[in-house]
Amino acid sequence: MKFYLLLFTFLYALGSTAQNVAKPEFRAVWVATVDNIDWPDSPTIYAHIQKAAFLKLLNMHQRNGMNAVIVQIRPAADAFYPSPFEPWSQWLTGVQGQAPFPYYDPLEFMITETHKRGMEFHAWMNPYRAVFSITNSSISSTHITRQHPEWFITYGDKKYFDPGNKDVQRYVTNVVKDVVKRYHIDAVHFDDYFYPYRIAGKEFPDDAKYRQYGNGMSKDTWRRSNTDSIIVMLGKAIKETNKKCRFGISPFGVWRNASVDSMGSNTRAGQTNYDDLYADILLWLRMGWIDYVTPQLYWEIDHKLADFNTLADWWAAHSYGKDCYIGIGYYRANSNAAWKDKTQLPKQIQKIRSLPTLKGMAFYSSKVFEKNPNGWNDTLRLNYFKDKLMR
Image (tube, rainbow, N blue to C red; front, side, top):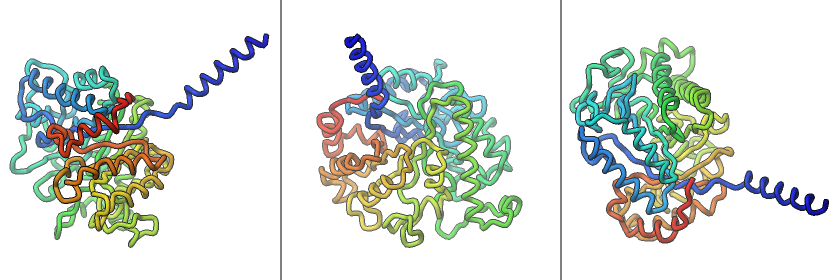
């Protein structure tokens, strides 16, 4: 009897331990497709070239110890997969609306190959950018800007969905829901482009919708409410479609400066999430509308306006129990004296690991790794990521 009691106690303890094992450290790389920043190297209709290029970058990141890729599959109301809503991306095949040859599903291929390597696949989508360049973009006859021109606002050299338009919010939600329903992705990932970054001297021209829907709110409050509402709508749609699929946001690295809000960070950023992009990230975290946050801390340690360490501390204290992964500006390598210092990256990783509420990191972006700047690929592969933690 004593033997069975001991055996039961051992098995119970083993089960409890297994349930409480923390998730491995998140180690991701952003793979940007807009303007062919990372993949494919240049547009091509040929499937075998697209596949070979993706496998090459995926294998490189696996060797370096990454356990996730964040791949941009919808850069400008277009698709890197067969979509019932939007045309094939010009950055995949060269002409918007043209499918790869021979025909295949690039998203299904990328997900399968990523999971085969024990890595997570996060589907990165830009919610509101619709035309990347008014003068140069390839726009198909089926593109949503041609189907519903009244949904869009021209600002600078780009066209954006109007965030204050409820039909727009429903449309974007349906696009996301379709991907979650049809593909075995691990997460939906949005970056920092909600309302666009300000262009000096030009106000975002959304007066018409503000007059229609403002309901007595200030314009800033109304804009934030628009962003809040689509986040709520998206989070609900994602969980209803696949409760295991996570929803993550990668915001600009400064929520607000302390000079305007006592909750803000000790920074002097020229633009911020709350005041300029109308994205109240802290509200979304507090309310549980998103599952993780990956703030883009692309500055160096001791930066005069936005110090990396100051911001890492701030986000560690403001993640509200949600997973927080720090975005690292790998692309900044050798851009100034601080980024020529070989210890810059190791120090940033050490800082992240010193804060228990930070659960990992993501690097922007993939293409830079091909140059192994400052030997940092080797630093990751042989030191910081040598344990090759799979998710």
